[in-house]
Image (tube, rainbow, N blue to C red; front, top):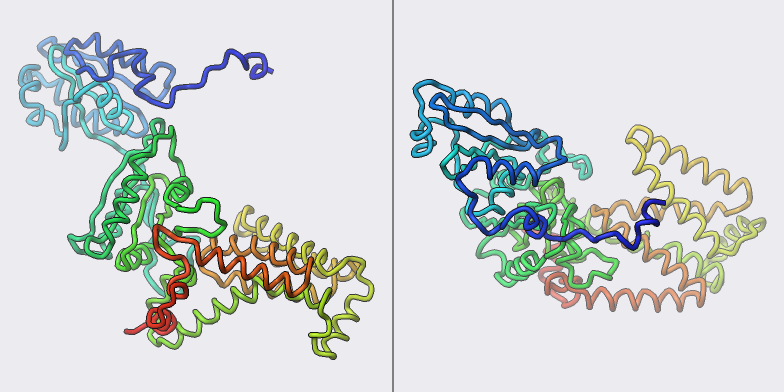
Amino acid sequence: MFWRKNKKNRKIPSLSCANYLRSYIAVDEKPPTEIHEVKQHITAIFSNSFDFAKRTFRMRDGCGVFLCFISGISSENDLEEQVIKPLLKQDIRSGDVINQPGTYISVSKFSKPQNWQHLIDAILDGNILLHIDGAEPVILQLADKQERSIMDPTTEYQVYGPKIGFIETSKTNIGILRQFIKDPRLKTLNYQIGTLTKTQVALAYLEEYCQPGMVKYIDNKLTAYNKDSLLTQGELTKLISKDPYSIFPQATLTERPELAAFSLIQGKIVLFVDNTTFCIVAPVTFMDMLETSEDQIFLVPWHLTFLRVMRLVSLFVGTTLPALYVALVAYQPELIPTTLTITVAQSRVQIPLPAAAEAFLMMFALDVLVEASIRLPSFVGQTIGIVGGLVIGQAAVDAGIVSNTMVIVIAFTAIATFTLPSWEFVNSWRIVRYALVISSSLIGLYGLVLAVGFLLVHLCKLESMDRPYMYPIAPFDMKTLLTFFYPKR
């Protein structure tokens, strides 16, 4: 009710932090040397913020000192030991600290703010403001940002390879990446994006491996980003995608450092976003979605050949099998072998639904089951996935809603699709599967062939940062294609 009553009087907040600060101070001006004026402005700006902390005291010579910081991201213990206690010693005078702060305060880095905007941003970043009356304010870098310990990735499991994954801090992730690529050609650029969130984004690429045009493209996109917030890597993925309305991902996510390092060696770009464990890898192709970091570890190349061929065949079968079943049963049953035709017909004798409705019902039930198992806690989700699939399938058959054959088709479809390494890629083909069933239910095999043709045209036209999505199939490159299935050692 409050929202409705005040609908006409509501004001849209400014997207710029500078616009907000201008109501208190002149953001481009240098902070004054008078301690009471600085204290008054900063206290007003951070009013109604319980985590904003400030300290006021006098040194032994009577000079006033003002300290302020954000508790929780600034180390209060270090502040007490390295700043406050040294300033309270009897043999230290305020003039000495003003002239040589590094001599008396045990802080590795300190700087003087250029203007009010710089000062406020420094406090919000976890630094401490030290202001001695009559002198310019000083920013002390004592940030105590909490980081999660480096652990094995939980979403990209593999048998072989390093048991290490990225964490939520981009600077730490760059350090992890440098453990895999010890070369000065590994270049990194840093951006602060979002006028409200000020999210740190790091761009990594290998000079002489990556095309300069790709770096410039990403740099222009990030520099031109003028929205108020950036909280997830999904927003960046949309930003760098040339066709944001396509259902196929034009960038991929990974939390495995070795896969990110391998992508850099291939001439790709890696983007890190603070507060997320996944990095963005771009550009990507259709074939990249069939690769895993574990592929580079196999000692026998034929093992890798078998796995990649299996993934490609599983993708084709898992996408087209339900639509093919609907087309053959509903429109072209004469194409099915006689023995199999009798088996399918017997299983559908008591089924009231047409084949297309059967397929839709089972595919939707399967997708709901998969989504539920993902959202539930891991120990519950696994039980729901296995038991739920068995119970729903058996109950549907016993009730005469679906046939045994359809349950087998949908079960094999699900298993085949989940052989793909990329979850974004799996979701894309789940959507395609529904579209193919619709086309098959309308005009049979002709509809299936027509839909697959439109799909191939879209994939061949799609680009990821000017790189053809279907390379090396379109444009065709026999040497690269053979290398993908049988890589040279």
